[in-house]
Length: 516
Ligand code: AHR
Image: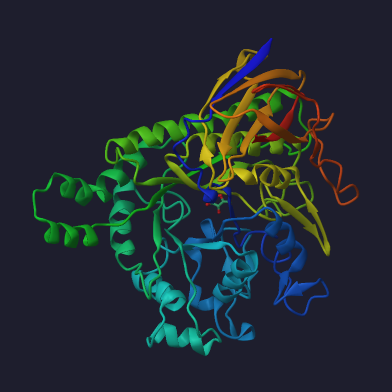
């Protein structure tokens, strides 16, 4: 059987925010220390303590934003411990992640330096669980105020005269769990209070993100939306004249986004990242596709309070979660990354693209040496994972216009279950080029796909890259760092505005199409 994809190129209206392709670093295991941060006295080539090879690799995939310092760590983090001369910074216990001693050598200045080196937007997560309103207010003042004030003066004393720009600010992390075990109603009150003091200084314009639900906790979404959108609803219904209206608008609680966390895992039975059979391949593909249902359902709940979709879903933690690699610290969450993870990344990013009217940002967990990492390090060695290559292959979707597609495909059957074989998304960039990304979820059978591209001149060129391997668990190791990487895919037939390909089993493909 052949799968069909119909693309009406005139139909696109929503833009795929580049921030969907965002990342996350936490003070966890070897993500920061012995990962990206080696210190400026390290023999590993670095710029002010940050590894050069990592920065180069990440610049190549145009990472749009970076979330820090957690995760669970964020609600234990007191930012003032991470500024000033490094040798004077106090140590703390990282109670979330293995009770290791955190020396605070990587703090605000180092993170902002990293963002500047990467040319990426910082996404700071503030401490609600164990921090005060004043602490959060002062952190924002420290980073962004351009003038005379206690915090701006402290920043200058620490060597930074000019303020930074901070675009994204999260008010707590997982406050239903590690961030304070709060009820939705309690957190909603806290959000309203804390966000009031996350100020816009000196022309900086912060987009505030509330802690959202875990997985299918629709009650959490309902309560936060209800409690934080009250004034917006009242404003909509109000008959006041313009000036009063705009004062109210200014003082209503601000919520640019509501986060959502979902990991592809079996919480009752974590399994190996590399040793798995087809039943676990199938199960993890099924779990990956569940993201679509979660976004649809949370968005429907949000629609009751925000039908115009002004509040974004920010999936600021997603990815695969397996048992840690044998012999590693169980709380360091270090796992290998295989072709299966490439499919998990490819399918998830397609889902986000297709929901770009509501999903405006996402952050895979995590960038280096933790969970579904893009980069693994071992001393001075570094390797790029299959997940890294998916971000590379998908980068052309960033800030392009989504082209909704009509997809007809067969089912991949396993045991009692079935899932669609082909998963896809498409966009058109400012130069008029169309990019289509496709995943074949069937590990055994290739799939013929025919595309009909309507509403454009004739096709002038088609280029494609593919990521696949004969083994489902193919991965890059320090012995064989190039076992799996994308290569050109030339098996493409073009006739008028019809394209046909045979998509190999268990593969991710990115196609670029130009028109005359
Ligand atoms: O990404 C690892 C952890 O998973 C984060 O710290 C936490 O927010 C989530 O539970």
